[in-house]
Image (cartoon, rainbow over all chains, first blue to last red; front, side):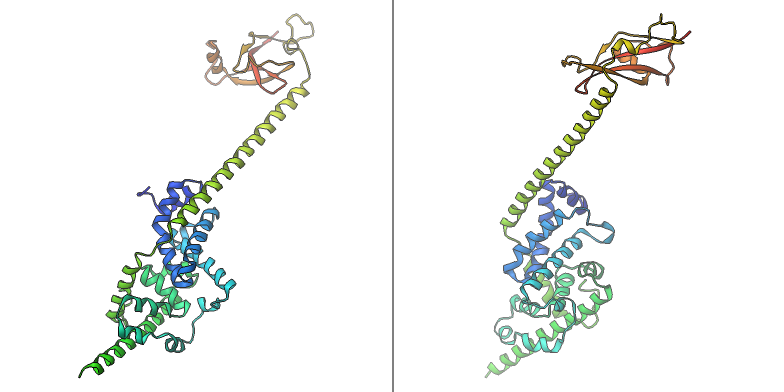
Length: 195
Length: 164
């Protein structure tokens, strides 16, 4: 199964091949899980993974290889399910998933200055990412953490490549401000602690 | 991707993203998720197999019904009626035929039967131990297939027409 490409695995899995499904699942469940953790929270991530792969299995004939890689198709399915989930729970307005927001306001609301001053750990970076508006968080997860290229991310997000590019630039600028600000804050704290 | 658009991006951010991505590598869904999905997949496969069997059974039943109807339409003509007697005065063309040769279902009991005339490649005679020396590679021969009321073919005989 290791040498078989994703498209063939998907085809076999849809015909009931359990080994093919297990291989496909092991290749991509982490990406779906991470995407779900960042977008919906860890509590919902398992459900998103399950619903996504179930949906992918049942929607025979929906995968078009010419439109992108299988992982893009799977993450696109996950995105669709998460949007539905979010619209039901109303915890996050669906529009925030797709629209640009007032960036400055969100920076002020979520900057984890004190945490970073206390511990410059990975959790702070993660928190910074999670504090981004959904549309920017999403593009960070896909392009930076999943290392997808613009076209693949655009395929998942169902938007033009230019939108991905501009959103990523804004998201990175936001993160730089958040992390840069806290760095300066930490430095000030360290400086003030010196005799 | 992280180096594609390096303008305006500081190295600290890139390093932070790399570190976060590496740390995230430990993220994975619960093992129960895969178990549940595999269980669902088995259920789907079973359902599909049942549907396939049902479809095949329906097609087979339709075929048998069609053959039975055809056989019924042919009536209960006696087998000997099919072959015109060489002595019949009105016969402009007479036929000679081999004996009925058994087919795989010949042993299945039947109450009534009908013959269906078909054309088969002359080479088919070989499989019955007959040597079609006078036939060409592409010649066809007439054959009467004996079909029971259940639609199963019991026997076949080969027919040759003779011009007067």
